[in-house]
Amino acid sequence: MAKVSSFLFSVFIIVASAIVNGSATTEKVGVYELKKGDMSVKFTNWGATIVSVILPDKYGKLGDIVLGYDSVKEYMNDTSYIGSIVGRVANRIAGAQFTLNGVHYKLNPNEGNNTLHGGLVGFSDVVWKVKEYKKDGHAPYIVFAYHSYDGEEGFPGALKVTVAYTLKSGNKLSVKMKAKAVNKATPVNLIQHTYWNLGNHNSGDILSEQLQLFASHYTPVDSQLIPTGEIAIVKGTPYDFLKPHIVGSRINKLTKGYDINYVIDGVPGKLKKTAVVKDYKSGRVMELFTNQPGVQFYSAKFLKDVKGKGGYVYQPFGALCLETQAFPDSVHHPNFPSTIVYPGKDYKHVMVFKFSISS
Image (cartoon, rainbow, N blue to C red; front, side, top):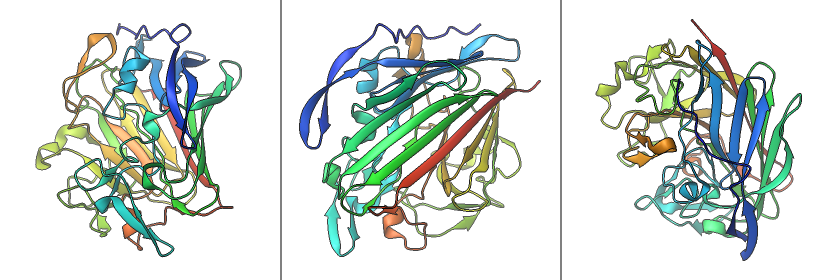
């Protein structure tokens, strides 16, 4: 039986400094648990982060299937965005700049000359307010809120953001991310950046897990992982997961593993099946649904020597990320779906994770 993390949410509370509307404020940072049946999920309001997802395997043994740490302080020092909500604009913006409505905006570069995952201090590195919390019952939930000030990391306009996590019948985890532009148009692309390993967080690599992606196209990138603007077909490439494939079966054809945006098949804006992951040893299956146009499949090549829960050290390919999203660098590609949110028109990003057991 895998050792389940001993992260003590109810007693571990610290005080951190948050930046709200450009001024310092004091918020409590704690850990919170939702339970329904034999499924439990834990969170911290540092980055509105998923800390653990505990489920039984096909033998009935409980295990934690997400990578993470044993203390909130370690999440504060994390550089891999483990489990967090990422924004204001996730993924990459080329040149750390863009022009909107005739105004040129300069952002904070944090990956070479480009902006990655919101900049130097994105939404993953701030304290979120716990707006609502019901830890058990028919549909336990927690709602985190954050007010991003005008000019934060260079982005225009104030933005009010919430993320609601809800446990539903049938071992489902619902994630609803919402954003409201207060006074100016602004790009918004929020993602949930959990690292999944269905075998257990400490079970080694995910190269033997099976993946299916309901995406006929992808957006090729240059050497800096910036999209070229092309939308290419996956057929005949190592990116083709239209039929289920073992993750490691063709990964040696890619120098950096998988780190690419897929164009999800289906009606834009509608909830649609996006991915299915299966771990044969544990029997766990994860299905993912979203209303977003894209999903970033990341095989965690750059995860290296990260000391995680229980002292286990995470290494390359120790997990996979499925980050539903708008297309990266959309502000520079008019042919991509727009990420601009205007006052009066809200942003809504829905994800549903459904877990089951297969023999």
